[in-house]
Length: 193
Image (cartoon, rainbow, N blue to C red; front, side, top):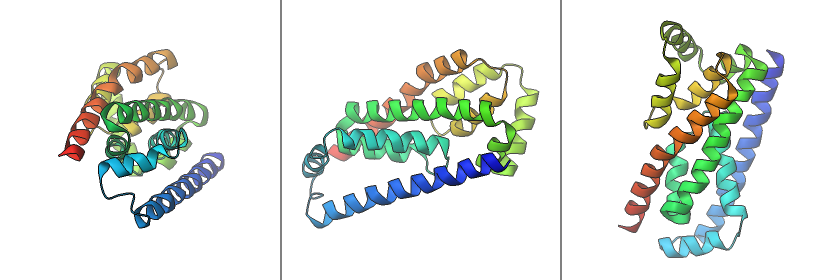
C-alpha cells in the first residue's frame, strides 16, 4: 500500500507541475495576444514545434493514469490547437498509452494501487459488477468504444483480471479511436464555427 500511495503522490505532483507550466505558457500567450483567433492560436502553438503535441500526448496519458480530468477536455484542446486530425492523433496516442500504462500498473502493484486511484465506493461497485459478468471482455470493448464510459477505471480493473496484456492492448487500439475521432471532428467543427 505504501508503494502505491507514494507512486500516486509522485504522479500527482508531476501532473500538477506539468499543468502549471502549460497554464503559464498559455497565459503568457494570451497576454501577448495569441488567442485572438483560432489561426493565431494555432500559429502560436506551432511556434513550439514538436514540444506542443508531445505535451498534449503526455497530459492525455497522465489523465488516464491519474483519473482526475475528463479525457474529452484534452480532445477539445487538441482539436482547437492542432485541428481535427492532428488533435485526434495526439489524443489517440496519449490516451491509448495511458490506458495501457494503467493496465500494467494495476498488474504490477495490484489492488492496493487501484484502491488508491479509484474512489472506494466506485471500487466496490466495480468489483461487484465485474464478479457478476461473464463476458467482461465484450463489456470492456463496448465501454472503451462508447463516449462517457468510465474507461479509465476499467483500464485499472482490467489489470487485476486474468486478461492477457495482448488482448487488452488490442481492445484499446481498436476501440479507442472511434470516440476520440468523433470528439475531435465535433470540437474542430465547433472551433471553426
